[in-house]
Length: 115
Length: 114
Figure 1 (cartoon, rainbow over the protein chains, first blue to last red):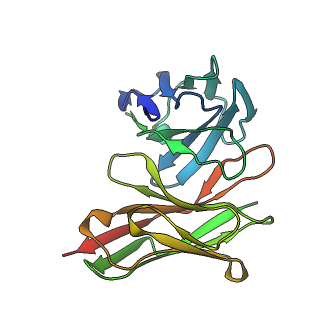
Figure 2: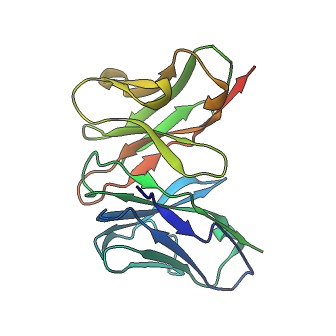
Figure 3: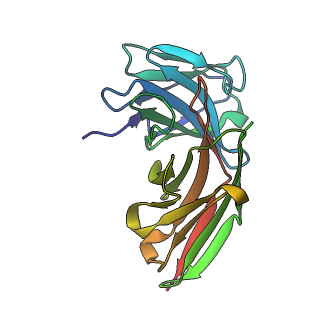
């Protein structure tokens, strides 16, 4: 079946602009996660959705970052007033239930470059 | 708080040689542990996971890992390396409670020489 998809695959933007990154999880998966992968910080958790609710936003690095999920499916990560330190690969993952030992399936990521 | 340490950011082996990638974890509760592989410009693919039960876990592509509670380790092995194994490998521990996020190690880049 179809895996997790993300768009765009690459995004180049200018400092100060807003960007939106999209994640389409595997159909029927109730849990959705956003992670960020950067050279300096490795893989970091950003936010977790269970259905349309976000019980844990503790990984969002600043209030410039926000995310929403609609219909228990598609999620959008928005970064406002982008900074150069936001340059990274943003990975989305989904899992069937969001419980312990649940496998997270990752998308290919969106590579964000802020000039 | 949970954490993962991967010893060796870069491991180089010859084709046909044993692959050993080291992972140690810190967790206040019995952990769920994962190994993921990332090929260039791709997302993460699950190799194997430990939840409960048998401590020797077999995964895809001939990889296996052994959970050793006394050593807080979850090392990844493969008896004979193949060129196609060249990739970056991440060990992760899963959170508990209301958030099942993964906490990853820094990764180990595996190079396989002909």
